[in-house]
Image 1 (cartoon, one colour):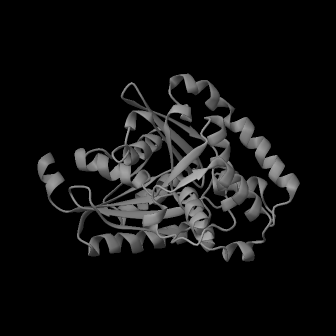
Image 2: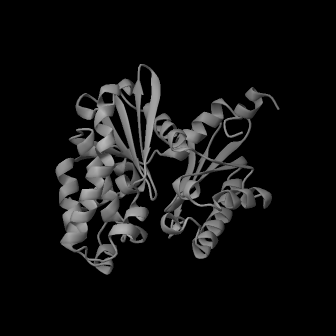
Image 3: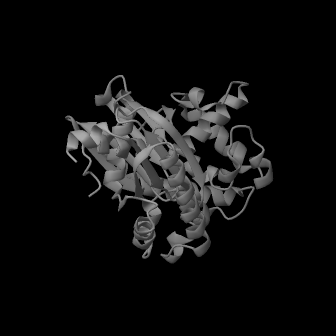
Length: 320
C-alpha cells in the first residue's frame, strides 16, 4: 500500500492508554472526527510508588481497550493503533501491556510516547484551530504527568513534568475533604516542581503575549463544572473553547477540597470517576499557569489522540 493509499482508504482509530483514562478517537481519512469517547480505568493506580502496574488496573484497562477497539472497528476503522503515556513510561512492565494488546489483535500497532513526543502531539492537535498558532501554548494535565508545548521560530518545543492528578493524589492527598495542611503541602510541592519553567520564558514559554489552551480531562471537567454553575449547558460543544480565568481555579480548588467524595460526585459537570483526583489536577493546572504567567486558559477536548491521528494521516509510519 502506498502512502497516498494509506491516507485515503479507511477510517483510523487511536486509543490513548492514559494514566487515568483510556480514550478512543476515530477519524475519517481527512481528519474529521467520527467518534471520541473515554473510559476511566485508573491505569496509574499505585504505579508511581511501586513501579509496576496494579493487576486490577491492568484488567480494567485491557477491558476498556478491547471494548473501544471493537467499537472502532464496528465504525469502519481499518487501522486501530495505541499510544502509552506516563503510567506506562514509569512501569517496569508497561511494555508488556501494549505488546499483549498487539498480540491479541486489539491494536494493530502500539508505541510508548516519550514526554516530549506527547507534548508535541498535544500542540499538533490544537494549533490547526488556533487563530495565531505562533503564540499558542498547550497545557496537558494528565494522571501521571503534565506536558507543555509551544512554538518557537516555527518549531514545536515541549517539556514534560512528573506532575499528574493520580500521582499527586496518591502521594499527597489521601483524605477527603482535603485538610488545609495537605493542600499546603501539595502547593509547596507544585511551586518547587514548576520552578524549572521560569527560565523557559526566554524560549517562548510565556503566556503573557500568547494564547494558553488547557487540554484533556482536568481542563474539560473544570469547564463543564464552571458552565453548569452558571446555569449554562455543560455539553462538549460548550466546553470547547470555554475561557477560565485563574481566579476560577482558585474558587474551584477551594470549593472541591472542602467536600467529601460523595458530595463531589454530585457536583454538576464533574464526572464521578474524577472526584478523588480533581483537586490535585486543578492544583497542577493552576501552578503551571502561575509559572508561565497565564492569567486565563481556554479549555479544549483536543488532546494527544488528536495529534497522533493527524500525524498518522500525514505519515502512516509515524508509530513505527
